[in-house]
Structure formats: C-alpha cells, structure tokens
Figure (cartoon, rainbow, N blue to C red):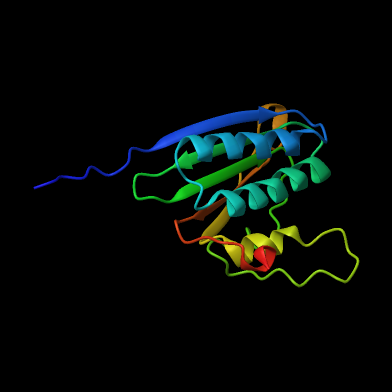
Amino acid sequence: MVTVAPPRSWAYALRLPHDPRAVRVARMTVRAALDGHGRRDVLDVVELLTSELITNAYLHAKGPASLRLTGLSDGRLRVGVWDSHPHIPAPFSGAGGNDSVPPARPGAESGGLRLVQEYADSWGGWALGDGALGRGAGKLLWFEVGGRATLPLLLK
C-alpha cells in the first residue's frame, strides 16, 4: 500500500517599488516560483492576472506595492496584491464575484480586471483601514485559482 501525503503549503512575498518595471519583476517572480513548485498548470493564468493587479497598483497608487503568492495544501494557489490606494474596484468589492466588471470599450487601455472575473476561481478585496497619522493603509486584492485554470482565449 502506498500513502500519498498532500503537498505542503508555501508562500513567497515581494515588495515592489512604484516603478513601471515592477510588473515585469512580478511576472518573473511568479514564473520562477510556480515553475519551482511544479505548478505549470496554472502558470499562464496566474502570470496574467498578477500582471493586471500589479499594473493597476502602479497606475492608481503613488507608493510601492506588495505581492504574495501562497500555494495551499489543497492544490489551490492564492495571490494577493497590496497597494496604498484605498479604492476597491469591481469585481473585488463584492467578494466571490458578486460585482460585475463591464466589458472594456473598443480601443480602451483598461479592462484587465474583467480577466480576473473570467479566469480566477474566487477573488476579493479588503480596505485596510487607517494607518499611522490618520492616513489610509490601502487595500489588499486577492484571487485564487486551482489546477483547472487555463487561458483558452489566448491559446487560439
């Protein structure tokens, strides 16, 4: 008889400066971590969605951002992105996808959060309240994917 132990959970955290190159650094970090943990099954989806969240952090916050990748023991992967801007956009303002992101207008440079709605298994966001000296502490946006995440629209 063979006993199979569930995979252990793991986590990586990365602090990113307010710099347009931070998106590339985040993508490279995601790729290295998931490849190292044998999670190529979710690599394309996680890389794309992480890139969208880090891009939004860069565009809408004036300070640094943080990225946290967590591999859970049940095979799910959770990605969290913190930034200093307090606004929680749809679909994150209604945890689990209750809010809908309208389709992007043709030629628009936005619409990436709709990708989260399409490809993540679950997502959410939290305002982090007041920080030191009465300033807001920003927000945390997160999403989770399991082993079934694929990008059929991008593979065609």
